[in-house]
Image (cartoon, rainbow, N blue to C red; front, side, top):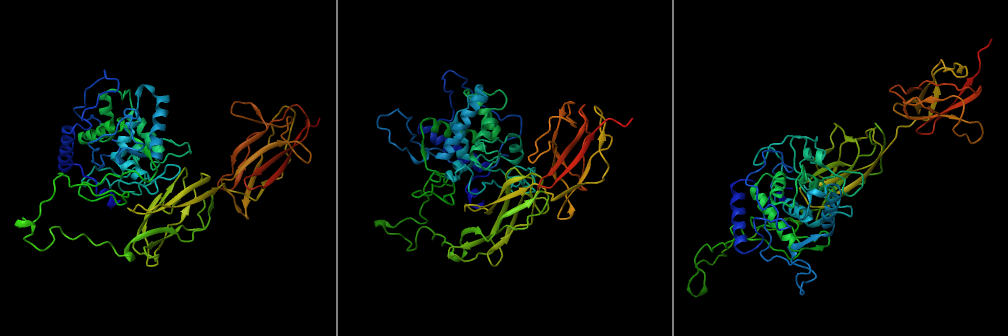
Length: 554
């Protein structure tokens, strides 16, 4: 991420000076003003003169893009009969990103209508935090192709925030880093994270999830964002900086004047303030001027007649591009097979990727970060959810052993070239429930009870898998009828639930560490006879046990 954040400013004198000059120039040119009025025209026009007393901010005061909107703003749709189909490049917002902002506005309008969240505010924050998810580089579900990570918050130029997520989101188990299109620090995401695309996950790298979370964060308390004072407080709570507030408000006003949709991946990423460009600029874009906006003078005055007093070029030669053999061009799966494991076991397959240069040959010394994502408690060896390793001389690197937790189902492991904008290599891993291939009673006592009484002896069974103890295996117990196709019996012995009601099927039973399961008490009704209790394990092992209800002998 060094390339990306090299083009963002650290907080301090430089940020203040550049932002102040830019805002002053913008105001003088009748661009988006520094003070925003409420849409209703009669609302609170005050601005926030000071930051909130609460030092907690969503982003940890990470750096952000300080570029301001163009001086010529787009017209509102319908404001001009000559309005073009597409406006200026800067007013274009990638389709998935724009959809996420509007969906978040609709969702919050349903749950917190009094907040009056405008989607243009989310767009303004998304612009300065990540350049609209790096110009809309997201997949069909709205997830960025590679994580967007802020710098390490280790107190060296930025805030000091020690690790709060064991590296689960940011890959750093020592300090936190802001994550995703809306740049949440992990501790804030843990509180405010949302599932904006209804996929059952809360992923800060997904624009739908991040936009909805940002909306809820901005609407915290009783804020009414149609009031300028409340809007200011909301933005300052996101990043504790008056320069940040002015920048966000400028983009907010710009987007309110009009915007248009562009295809994902074609959005404009803000140019750097030091004359460079984004690591992957859009076609046709060029570097922006230096922060001062003034051209650099020639090193020596030109001679009369237009000649130069120095035959050498007036500008230094550009840095030669890296050799193809040294340029990372691709990161790919290096033959990793199916990733499947039983709950609690290690995955037999190891995740392996290969880095290649522009010539298609292996590239060594490439930093690769493996990150576990999704609703899972699976972890790499050592309990880590993210690890960073370096490719060897053959261009490959293998992740540590992956161990399944107790949560069953699918999850994803992503491998990215650390700090690069290449697409991630994604692997789907599946955790299956613990299984048993045999189950049997631990004794052979006859199980009898008088009508209306309870069975004196408890039913205890033990499960095994391939001859070994099968711990944590799910078991279902059912009182069944006779016949070739048994069904749940509606008479005879029964269990009781927590409320004392009669039940004849029990689920969510599990064997203990020794593979043993002791069933709850069993009761007899008033009908004498011989009945059957069937126990079935995850994995298909079954045992049928006889229960006899009869009056005691005279």
